[in-house]
Amino acid sequence: MDGWEGSYVCLQSLLKKGSCLTITNTYIRRNLTLAWPLAFNALLVQSMLMIDTLLVAPLGELPVAAMGIATTIVAFVLGLEIAIGNGIQLLVGRAFGSNNQANLAIAYWSGLLINISTSLIFLFILAFWGSELVAAITDDSELAQLAETYISITKYIVLLTAYTQVCTAFCNGRGHSKVPLKGFMIELPVNAILSYFLINGFAGYEGLGVEGAAWGSLIAVFLRAVFLYLALKADDKVDLTYPLDRKFWKEIGPQYAEIYPIAANFFLLSIGATVYQLLFAQLELFSFVAITLIFPWVRAGTQFPNAWAQASAISISQALGQKDTGDLKLFISSCTQVGMTLSVIIAALFFILSQCIEFVYPDIEADTLAALIIIAPLYIVLPIIRAYNTVAGNILRALGNSNLVLKIHFVTQWVIALPICALLILQFEVSIFWAFAMIPIEELLKTIPFNRYKQLYIGRLETK
Image 1 (spheres, one colour):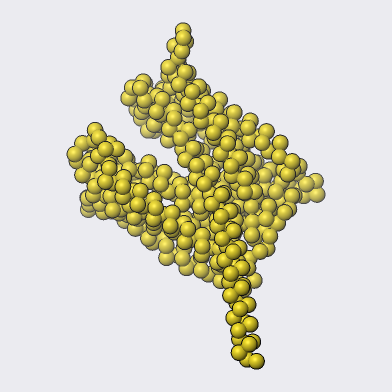
Image 2 (cartoon, rainbow, N blue to C red):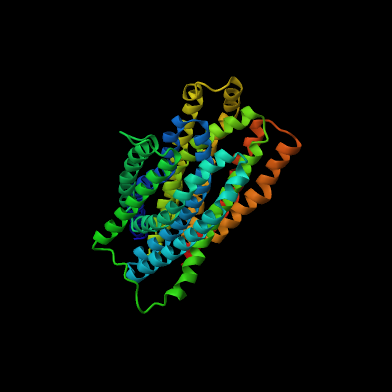
């Protein structure tokens, strides 16, 4: 009898394990469906300003330099709005998972107020102190004038993007990430075609130069905002009517408490990246040029693991909303494995890039090419280390520990990595290899607390 009972228990265990694996595989497939539009959304957000730069390039070095200054300022504000959107989509995911229509509406309207308020603050700053910001970057009056012209128009993109990011977060949180992707597929061709003619002119029209690029982008973003508004309005499953029995101002605090650390985290890391760039600028010119050339590839390559991590966070938020935490440990483990697999693929692509770098940049100086070869092992391994931290950080945010993630980033970057990097470059005048190595070293430092706290909070889930 004991043998039969043992066999029965063993069979039950196998069936349960098989059931868990089936559920986890379903989550993984759903995550992939959610992640690839998120990845392309992130790439397309970056491409909006890249299109303007490419179209302005034939006008000469001065307009391109002006675009570089202006887009740096505008891109920072847009990035902050996207970070706020990432916080909103976790709230939406939780409300969607619990099938709570009232909480969905509250998450939408609270997020809209927070993001619009943020955009109005920066709109005010750009309107009244835009000239001072540009003057702090360049003392060339003609260059400053061109940059100010571009900013005077694109500052309104900041306001429109605040709305589009809330709509995007609302769609992503509900698992409908293809809707924002369709919006970008409308925006980008319009931006490219309209900006081209407004920059260069057509028929008897002379064109506006840099100003034309700004108007093209503004009109294209406006069309995306209209599309998202109509898409939400046409969806009969979406009801954004605010619940009358819930006082709006009392709901803002809890929503802000979850969104703020994510936005603050972006702000912290963005300023940190700027400080790194300023420190790298103290290296030899060829070294700084090499790092400048490779950074866009590094940013683009990290979008896919980032998108997977965001999709995982949304799925976890939905599961928490449903109070379905039984299979979360297995799902989180699988999410980490898939994220690391993606990072290995990105690293392999970076290895191929390193072998073809002189074909990608055929006109660079020999010293710059040598510097790129020296740092190749570092930027190849970087996605693998960073991917684990990205996935772990998003998992902790989804579990309600955004402040903890913020603390980890602050200590490792601002207390340890940046001071050491400054000391190495400014005091010891190290080579490009050791200077650039501080970025992967910083990521390595983060893996220790991220792994520890991820395991800790997963353990707490099991005891509930």
